Every structure is written in C-alpha cells, then in structure tokens.
Length: 176
Image (cartoon, rainbow, N blue to C red; front, side, top):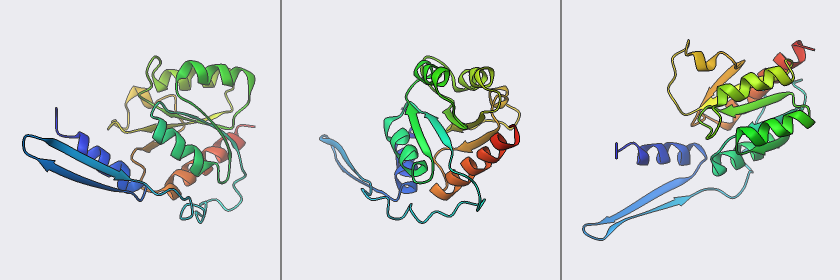
C-alpha cells in the first residue's frame, strides 16, 4: 500500500539482468511479466578482487527463495555453497559442519539475522559473517555489530557480491 513494491521488484529484476513489463486495464486489473535469464553465462566471467582468494565453504541464510537460489548459484561458481531458509536450520547445519563465511539476511522470520550472526560467533569465532539486507540501516545500527561485513540488496552487481565474499574469506583466514 505504500507504492514501493513495483520499484523494489524493478530494482531486483534489472540487477539480475532481467526485464519487467506491465499492462493495466481500468476495471480489469494489471498483469506484470517478469523475465529473468536462465543462463549464468555472463556471471562466469566475474574476476574476484583478490586474485589468490581461495575457494571457501559458504552458508547462505536467506528466506526469499529466488534471492537464495541466485546468490547460491553465483557464489557456487567459485565456492562450495549451502543455503538455508531460516535461522534454526542454519544453526543446525553449523553445529555439524564448518563454514568459512556465513552470509545472512537481516529480516529472517523466526530469528533475526543479527541473532543468527551472534550464534555463529559462539559456535566458531573464526567464521566471517556478512550481513546482506534490503533495509536502510545507519552505519552504527546495533544490528550490524555482529557482522564483519555488510552488503546492500539489491546488489549493485554480482562482481560486488563475489568481492565481499573474497574479503570475508580473507578475514576468516586472518583469524586462523
């Protein structure tokens, strides 16, 4: 009801190299068609900012299926990626597996992302945590304190997402 829905959809879809078309007929409603590329061909040419950044084990915690799938596919070009849609499932996985980087959405149902990041630190303090959020947060927002790095959704580019993960891997390796 605030009028921000379509601009958010447009921003997300165009960042993934897609297209949105709308047709509206008075008294009959509106139809929106979203087209997204099926191929990762353009993504495969991403050059990481840290040439010797090693492949890492990355956990993506994101409740939006489309975002979770695309982020996992993009990062999977270089890293081993597992994804979970909620905090409880993520914490269960973290109890049995080791990850170098955990990428967490702030607005996860059932358990906020900052709480997930705090629990990640208790499980393994060496793990680097990255906040990904579509929310506008002040630099000193207390919800960002548990994270090593932060990235804004929609992402500027997939190369930026790769670079932030490479930075997180460097943080993780520095803690060993």
